[in-house]
Image 1 (spheres, helix red, strand yellow):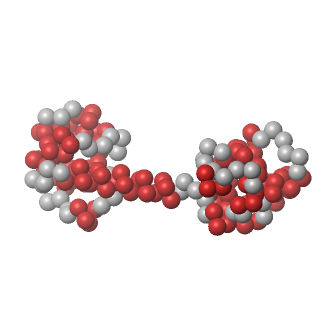
Image 2 (cartoon, rainbow, N blue to C red; image 1 turned 60 degrees about the vertical axis):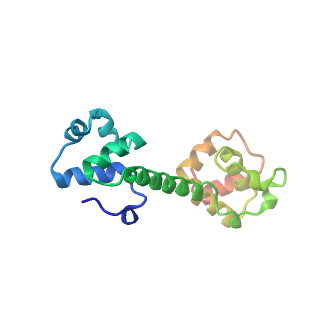
Length: 169
């Protein structure tokens, strides 16, 4: 018996299918044969490389005796979770960064991923410890180190000083 959706919201349908197949002592290829689906499709879902579509949700619902939209709702819940997590990480904590550092641009429209090289350079040149620690937390040391190597030169001595002080190379 599959769990109620409110108990498993946010997990990939493949995780649930793998769990249920293990409980029933079945293999993915056996499930594929029983619902008339390609073995590769079931394998990709079990390995979280593919999503559930409406047609497959109906086929699975017949096999597992659930509502026709059970697997679609589980997929939608998982998709929402992934988007919500990516939005959380899409910008640093801007309360830790002074807007004046970016006087020449609209601070609210900065694309923090697309412009990371320029942002890293600007903050290492002109930022304080809180701002530097925020970009380290946001981008990670590995990414910052990689971007620093792509920066041709900085005329401000604080750039080199902050790289050394924060152990970024």
